[in-house]
Image 1 (spheres, helix red, strand yellow):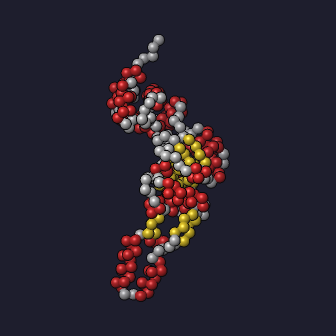
Image 2 (tube, rainbow, N blue to C red):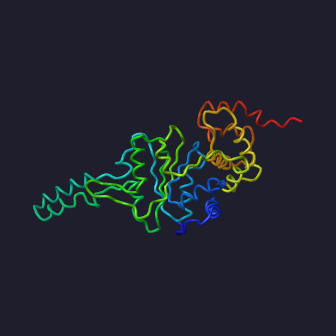
Image 3 (cartoon, rainbow, N blue to C red):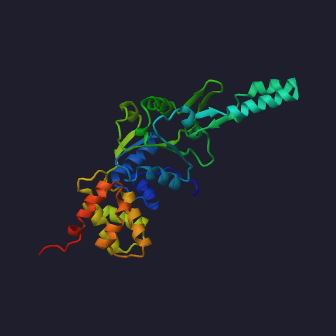
Length: 301
């Protein structure tokens, strides 16, 4: 982890922090990130998969020198997996050991602390509320739209006061709130009450110029001609009626795959052979392959 640094004091410093970690954000996003840090409000990032939502949390953790704590959401996620649970197996074993020693003092002492901290298994949300030597951590709540609505309501309670009530243990409250980043791929609408707790930003696909800058920053070994050809092709693909258009993450993966094959120029055959890196559905691969001849045809005079 890098050394701890202070919270940026301006939008320009926020842009510089993101750029320093090779995240080329537009000013609108930098403003939202700055305000979230300044006002200690969660950030809610919505957008298509692969456009860089999750990366924001990673970049903030690296740039600020903070620990990154990630909660990956999924259907059926509950408090046991997200907040805490008791180590029941260890509790039972220690109780049996105390009984086997026939020592009344040991049994009484263990009974008093059986729901103590050493038996508490801390999950991401609880760990994010604890003090950290490097300062409040960055808590990434990834793909919150995949969680069930009851968990969403539970999450709303935690983000309101940054505290957790454990019946057998008491209330655990964050001395300083973590830096919270929530992401959503919009597979379903997230409740307005949760969004109101956050500063919102839609992360869209970058234009060609920005995407080329991102590729050059993240895959510097790709020459200028190859980078421009890759970005042009991907930008054209996104204009088609695809089931799932490629994100920036796929653009970068495709560039690395082409370089791994020892190529330094994009050709029709190379594009056809590697479409599975760029596209993730058979129908989309078929659509792209059918148009490759036209995509690489020289411009008409």
